[in-house]
Length: 221
Length: 221
Image (cartoon, rainbow over all chains, first blue to last red; front, side, top):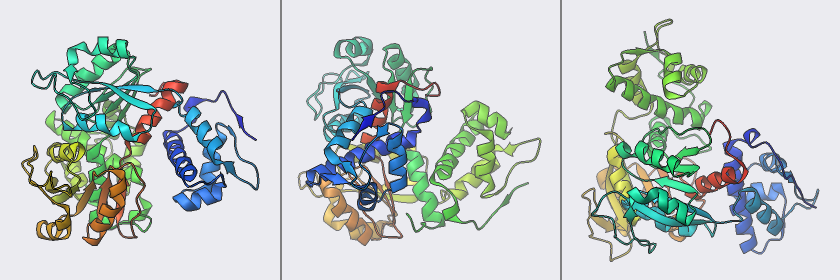
C-alpha cells in the first residue's frame, strides 16, 4: 500500500532530509542487488547504520510507504525515491573549468547512475579548448556558455575554476538560465533568488578533520 | 579580553558547529585583509549572511571572546580559531588514487592555506607510478602506504580510488595508523572506533539539486 503525496511544502523539508533520501535510494539499490524484497525501517537502520525513527519521519513527508509489521517493498520504495528526487528524467550538467577537477567530474558522473549526464565542459584557456576529456567530450570555449546551455538543455552548472574566476562564471551561469549550481571553487558565491547554489568546500572538510585530530575523535566517529 | 577554555567536551560539539568555525575563520581572514580591526557578531552575520546568535553560541563552547558593545578583535579571534581547529601545526595528507580527482586534490591543497600539505600520492596502477603531478609530487606505489605514512608523518588519508577498491584502501589506511580519512569514492566505508571518516558524496549533492529542480527552489536557496 503506497500513497504518495503529490504536493508537499518544499521549504518544510530540510536539506538533511533531502540528503538522506539520496542515501535511502542507495540502500534500496543495494538491497535490490542482494535480492531482498521487503525491508523494515529497523532492518534498514541496522544494516546501513541509520536511525529507524528518522527514516520513518523523512519518508512521511512524501506519503505513506510500507505495511505495518511487514515493511517497505524494496523495488517500490526505490521507484518512489527516484520520483521524489526528480531522477525519473535525465538532468544535464555543464561544467566550467576544465582543469583536473572538472575533468575528474566528467568521469565521475558515470558513477551517479543514469540520471545525470555531463553534456559540456568549458574553459576560457585557449590552450585547453579542443582537448578531449576521459569522458569523450571536447573542451569548448567558455564564452559559448549561453548557447551550449540552450542547445543541450543544461540544468545544472558545475564550477571548477580557480576562486578568482568563480563569481564571474556563476553570474554567467545565472544569465544562461542554469537554476542549480554546484561550486567547487574555494569561495563564497552570490546568486539571486530562484537559483540554488551549493558549495562543496574541501577546506571545511579538512579543517573538521584537523579539529578532531587536535581534540580527540568521539566514539561515534 | 579573551579567556579560552583549555578543556571542553568534543562530543558535545556538533559537526555543524565545527564546520561553522571553519567558515568563521575565513570571515576573519577576509576582514583582516580588508583592514577591519574589530567586528560584532551582528556585523559579521550581516556581512557574511550568518546568524549572530549562532555565532555567539558556537564560540561560547570554547571560551569568552569579544568585549560587550565592542565586538571581537579580528586578528585575535582568527588566531584562536586557528588554535581551536588544530591548524597551528601542519597536517600532512596522503592521497591514494592518482586519477584526475586525486591529482586535482594535490593541487587543491594549495588553496587551503598553510595548514595542509599533501606529502604523498599513491596508486596501484604500474602505468601511473612514477608519473609527476601538477603539485610536483611523483606517484608512488600504493603498497608502500605504511612506510610512507610513517616516514612523512601522514595524519590524513584521502581516498580517490574507484568504489570497488575503496574499502581495501581504507583498511590499509587504518592499519597504517591514519586516524582521519576523507573518502571521495561513491561508497559507504566502515572504519573502527577511534578513526574518523568523512565521505564527500557528489551523488548526494547532485540528487539534492535534482530534488529542488523537480519541486521548486525555496526562497532562501
